[in-house]
Length: 234
Length: 234
DNA sequence: AATGAACTAGACCGACCGGTCTACTACTAT
DNA sequence: ATAGTAGTAGACCGGTCGGTCTAGTTCATT
Image 1 (spheres, each protein chain N blue to C red):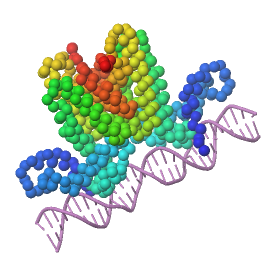
Image 2: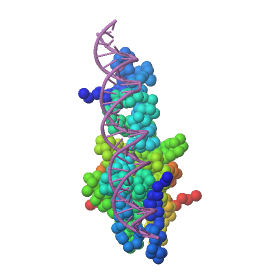
Image 3: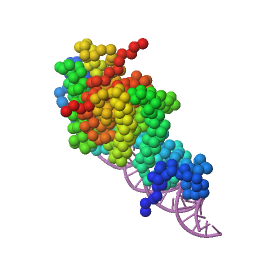
Image 4: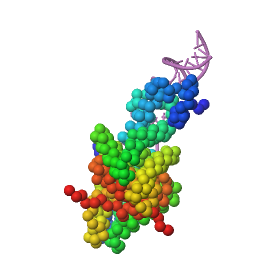
């Protein structure tokens, strides 16, 4: 009765096929860079992620996602049991992409900890600026956007987003810990400070979106490095 | 061909009818404090504002708004030409309510400027806590929510929200100016600092919503008073 | 050559969307 | 008394929503 919906597996499995078996099962990573099944799934993911980011969850129907992906509804529901499950998959992929394409580089230990935060601010500004240049609008944070739109409606999505924000928090905590170890920072509540920095970042992004003006980010975002929540003294 | 839709007028006009013409047209401000037509309109506004806040713009249809207000569709479209216009009216009313019920008191000059910011933080926490207690969810900021959901879709709404955020900024600027005048603050960019405080506030609220946990606000929000954007030195 | 699974195609479904329309009621002004 | 207007009622509209279903196609395996 229940369909198969292979999307769960593919996320992790494709990565592990680096062995030198040339013949078999996993057709996705070897030889053909654009084989039909995985291509279809990826196109759906990319389409959904673009459309939902530039508009909103509710405003983008699965018909629109399919059309923009060049895929038919039948295929869509072969891969995803529902729009909600698609969104969950989009979030997973988006976080992985963001981590690999940005967080890892931005928070790398090649410069002093607090300067990494400035690099983070700068990168976020540049990203939003680039987006604004080719869509004409400041779109903000893909995670923050969905968080606000769906947190009260879709508990599964809220949970996924909560986990993503916790991972981001862990990344920033690492930076702060490095700063403490380097003696650049004293007597702060590391976890709360990381949380406050994320909050500030999300808020700046929100304001840039309402004002439809990226320059808000250029002015405000660098102050993220100055935020501190002091260690609680009992 | 086009219907009348009296709501446009009422917003500004009711305020200006302080002249002593007793006889005519505007029946809404004089004598009867609860005359039927205004009651219906208010019920629609209240219903929409509650529903949209606890769910989202897209998730709440006009049928649901009418039902929750105990009003029929015919009446709804007598007062509002569209769901979008209703939302505009809701935003106007919400800001006025917030200003009268909270901002005016919170930012009053009875205590030192920077303490007013703490009072603001405390009030926001208490508000969200109360909301969470009777809805089971942290709903966040009504303005921030709509800002993120609709800024890229409904320019008129985005503009209204932008104006609201600018007014809020002006309120905080006043507090900061008082602080500067009192010698509590030096060399800051007042406008940008006010903006940063709003950003931080919105971001904290967003995080509280994703984590569905008001305590986030209790921990983070008070630090709003420490935020400063230094005066730009050229 | 045949089998079965993965995938695609697209017609179709009931529910609901925002919005319209006509008829009716209640009240005001004359 | 009457005419006009503001407001109410609720059936109705075309369109779109998320999702289903059946029939076909492609392809690896035997």
